[in-house]
Length: 162
Image 1 (cartoon, helix red, strand yellow):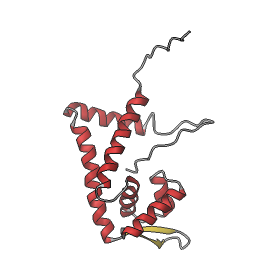
Image 2 (cartoon, one colour):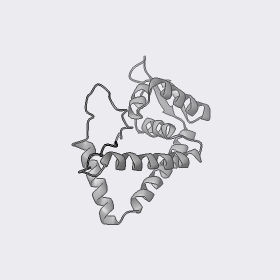
Image 3 (cartoon, rainbow, N blue to C red):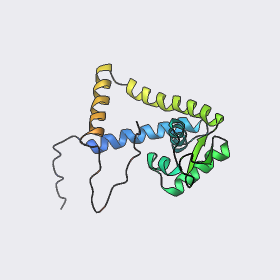
Image 4 (tube, rainbow, N blue to C red):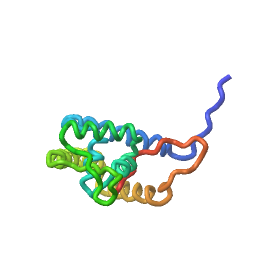
């Protein structure tokens, strides 16, 4: 005997957000891949250009564990886009400094990321676009600003530093 599924009383917000987020990430990865970057490399470059940040701070911003962060910075150094340097404020800490070539590629990668976002939002009528962005910003800063604590924590999506 097959049990009846419970009746859904609300839109499946989890599916809608997860699906659209996944598709955005795949489009972003494809675009960045065309210039030899990954989304993580883009994230590190852009945030390292904003201000002096340690490897640990950049890992937190990009939701990367230590191993992933080290591999990402290694790839950026190998490409000549960044280098590890001592911090000007804490001699024990290492910052990620972006090279001139890294700043150029970060500019190009930001154009790609902005284009992916622009294309997605551009698929909506102006009035819906504004409402969607305003509503998502409100959810992200208010009701859904912090994750719930529990015995089986869900993996956190990358945080927006802005």
